[in-house]
Image (spheres, rainbow over the protein chains, first blue to last red):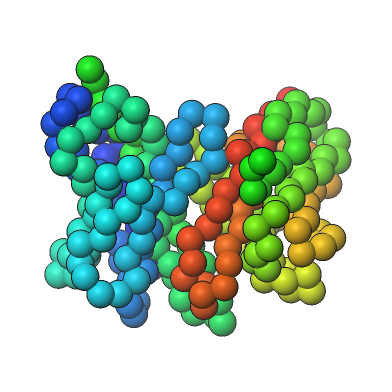
Amino acid sequence: AQSVAQPEDQVNVAEGNPLTVKCTYSVSGNPYLFWYVQYPNRGLQFLLKYITGDNLVKGSYGFEAEFNKSQTSFHLKKPSALVSDSALYFCAVIITGGGYNKLIFGAGTRLAVHP
Amino acid sequence: DADVTQTPRNRITKTGKRIMLECSQTKGHDRMYWYRQDPGLGLRLIYYSFDVKDINKGEISDGYSVSRQAQAKFSLSLESAIPNQTALYFCATSGPGQGLSEQYFGPGTRLTVT
């Protein structure tokens, strides 16, 4: 079955340290991958996407993600975490077929950045 | 002003009641979506609409219905609410781009069914 997985419910990191939020996927055909962030009492905000091209994708707020086809992964990274990065992060993948493209979300990973 | 708005933001209702959640957007997008968010489950698609005359069921449409009143408005109804429909509901829109464009989300409606 086509799916996306976020293996960590929560990631804890100290402010100033690098952070990684993991995402793996399983799709038939080309993978189209997204990261969204949800701050408390807010809707989801788009961070970045991989459609084609360079495996390293840069997005909003200093985040980047690396597409790794052999490991079927799309991990979100940031070189130096901020307390304000604390939020819920969702990886998502587009499932194609049936004449439409549908976005499937992972369960989410809560990032906590400690001062 | 927000590009995607949802009303109400919070609602408590009783089992068996009919309730409507409304979504409006000013982004000029044709595509609109309704999702529900449950802890540990991410977001799941309820219904989606690619234009005013095109409405499709998502993965969890049972117990829900929708209406696309105009390009900018997409409403979600629960005809007879039940407690397991307690969740956070999001409306989203996306532009053209063969379905590969990012989605823009409203602030959400927190619905509690008692």
